[in-house]
Length: 291
Figure 1 (cartoon, rainbow, N blue to C red):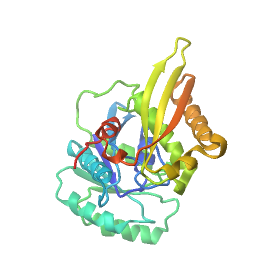
Figure 2 (cartoon, rainbow, N blue to C red):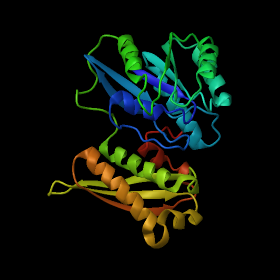
Figure 3 (cartoon, helix red, strand yellow):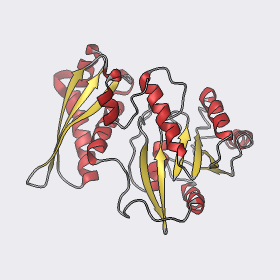
Figure 4 (cartoon, one colour):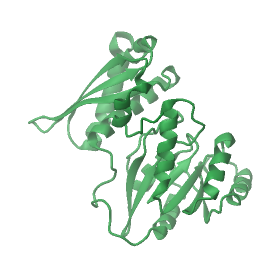
């Protein structure tokens, strides 16, 4: 098991998708896109690696933030190796430094991975690698681009060599521990972020309502988009319902491809100012409700 840790928006989900070889985690330009701890399952020869894609670790203020950070540290608990992914362009030192300090005393084997080598300048990159590499007892340092895949095969070789001998934990054809029901809500949430950009803040969630296999071999999925303020509803709906239609069409097309079957996706919007205090929603997305 490999825990993939880092500050928000370092590229953890993109890297997990690269290592698995297909999409198992949603990505966006927004920080803190990943909320719950999700597993990606990567194969490398006769080795099965369980990749724990964790939320970015940052200073939590709200209940949702605290639950996300708790999930990230839990993801590292049972790991055979911890991979710290760093964005050398943004760095986010205020979050990175405490994270490295926390890792320094942990017993797991640790690897430092600097991302975005396709965009970073060489000299500052090497200086950063040397500085961070001395701080937490990292065994090895890798330079990659999670987006293009540069350096990822070498990283995968190294991770594979660190895995202990044991029975495989999952069937050969399984790529994630997420249920199809949860994956479907994540794909819709990704489209919300991608199509609305900064217009929709983080106080939004996508809830599964029903997931029904039809006799004709297609699947009918009904979901609820929950937003925190009534002023956001016209933004999500768009003029004449154009935005929610666009979100639904994009999510449906991607789900059809992932699930390998025709998808009928129905979305509706609900305003709930206190959804972040709803224990049921936390359970649905795999987070501890906490305090």
